[in-house]
Length: 353
Ligand code: KG4
Ligand code: ZN
Image 1 (cartoon, helix red, strand yellow):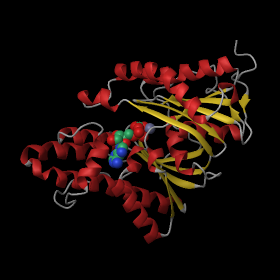
Image 2 (tube, rainbow, N blue to C red):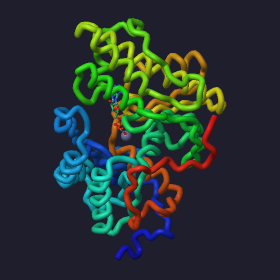
Image 3 (cartoon, rainbow, N blue to C red):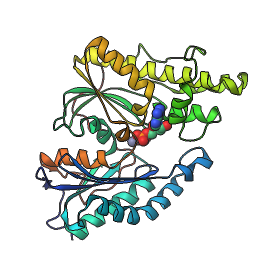
């Protein structure tokens, strides 16, 4: 059935101006995007935040049901926004993992059906790699860099020699940075998702008011769960009026760890560029601190645009496009592939510092 589309042994390649259609449904955002070269023709994100807010976090079954309902409508809107006909699509790409199994399945299956219907090639994309590459959207190359990916599901530092050449430097042992923001916010009685709430309340708080822990600064790895526990113990002792100070102190602690670990990674790898991505890279204090450090230490800072930091399909289409331009070997990521909720970033070098 998939003859001449893309079998395991084949590779997908596209020309510079071929249209790439991206699909992202790894968690609670239903997102579709259309790229033609560097030109962004359409970018649609249907947020489910309101549906999950009463539960203080993402409920997998609600997420997948909402994806199923949103995808066909969003598809029509995306095609209209892009000003293309479905037949103009040259490559269909969708998030293969990591993420929630039932959420991944909806977008992955939708995208495969689209590719089969249009008789166009399909590639599955690693969500972490898509974040990692997102700071380079719009600049035709992936510079050798230290990549900081800080999202709700993952927090890691990668030594990237180029596209597909990654070495893990260190990652969190427990909560991801975004997860810590969300959990601390929940403890402080703030709505989901906690990152943007804490970011905005911290603007009128004192970051030095509470001295919160910065774990594992001198060891390989990161840990944010102790920070969350510290917030749990503090909460009963503080007044509602102190919440902005708590937010500022908490944010400062997370940002401090991410910045110090990034500086250490730059020093160890001798890379001249730091590329920061993932939902937490939207944080205003992290962006400010990284900019200050880049001026102080003279490294190039490549920050993903704020709209590209949280989950979106532009980064999925972009990652697929980058690989397909070089002849993407379908391997486990073509039409015959399956989702993988625990998919890891494919590493080409040894882990460690
Ligand atoms: O990359 P993303 O959309 O999804 C995952 O791949 O996980 O990241 C979502 C995470 C959430 O935990 C959210 O609270 C956090 O990013 N986030 C922020 C900010 N905006 C989103 N964290 C801190 N400050 C922000 N401004
Ligand atoms: Zn993400």
